[in-house]
Length: 133
Image (cartoon, rainbow, N blue to C red):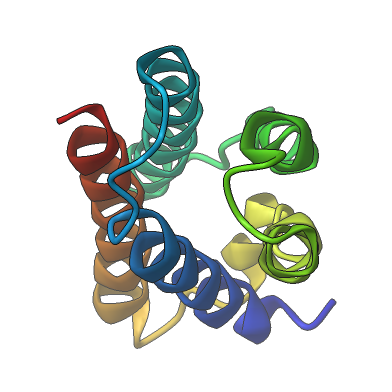
C-alpha cells in the first residue's frame, strides 16, 4: 500500500458509510447502539493516531486496532446495508489500516494530512452520533 493513499482511502470509506447510514431511519435500536459504538471506536483510534503523530510519536497498535474494527464492519452492518457496499468500503478501510506507515509520508504537508485524518475521525464520529439519534 502506498502510504500516500492511506488518508484518501480512509476519508472515502468514512464519507461513503456516512452517506449510506445517516439516510437510514429504520435501524433497530440495538443495532444502532452496536453500529454507533463501532464507529466511535474507529473515530477514537484515528484520533489517537493523530494525537501521537502530533507529539512526534508513531501510533504503534493503531494499525492492528483499525484493521480489527474494519474487519468487524461486515458482522456489525449485516442486514443494515447491502453486503457489497459494506465489503467494498470496508475493504478500503482494511487496505488503509496501516496508519503507522503515514510516518513515511508526513512531510511538508504534515499539518494538512493530519487535519484530513482528523476530518475522517470526525466523519466516523458523526456517523456514530447520527445513527444513535
